[in-house]
Image (cartoon, rainbow, N blue to C red; front, side, top):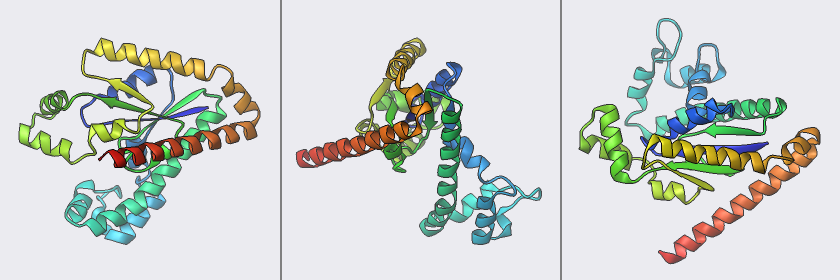
Length: 239
């Protein structure tokens, strides 16, 4: 099974691509959805958060009070680190379980929709990285329109993230969302056709013979890590 990591910048259209893929019956593992699920009442992660930050971060119904927790960690890097140390591993394990479930169902492709795919290092664990991108001025205009924010506020949000140029450097596939919805849809369809060709024969062999799938995954990940390490060394020399 081909495991694809999907990412992009704020207001570049990643969610639109994710929906197009879902409509095409591609299983989507959404990291944002899982991040909410792993802190639901009764989960180990929520219990650990309460231990770390106290019961005041709970609502009356026992669910997480995100506003209260946000106020605690907003200006405290150490406390954010503690929270991330609880939530991120829980999300990663939830992603692994979902991906394994897709493999057990015999899926050819599974897409992990992860906003911080590159920043978190999860790109190292997928077989292909897809980045949804658009020029800065279009990204800025879309974000201002979407959030009804000022240009200054929108620029601050965009600049607080990894730049699109940096993310694109990790991409195996770049989807350019600088034009019309129809143009983006055509790129997604072309990508789907490419995946069908890539997995035409290998998915059945890997599913019927698990060691073959594990070996193929190990070789793919080792090659990807070597390729991007070489690319970063080359970029560093040019700077």
